[in-house]
Length: 166
Image (tube, rainbow, N blue to C red; front, side, top):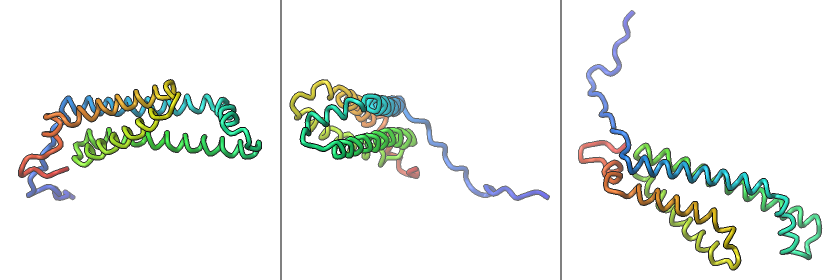
């Protein structure tokens, strides 16, 4: 028995061209941001022993139980924030590569929020060495945003009249 062709009588959907070079570069930078975030998370977990000493020095009146609880809060918070960061980098890379026009706006908003975070980190006195990874991450984000808003990227994200937005 022959099945009828479900596409009979319909025009084939137009094939969207692949992303332009600037979007490809932005996506690569976003994946790099995810890798940097993952490495930062792993290094943070590897140095968890120094966290207890640091917390003890900054909070000398805490009991051992309170110190342990605070250490757990910092550790869990760091893991959650690290995983969210990695997930956002990857999600933004996938959505921007797919040409979702909202994705580059979300990426720009996330970059703006990260800029505020970096300013907060920089405002803390004596945290120069600890700001290296946030500054590197910010520079990667800046590069991605610049590439996402180039002319060829704008043409990719803004469908021409008559084309359907994907």
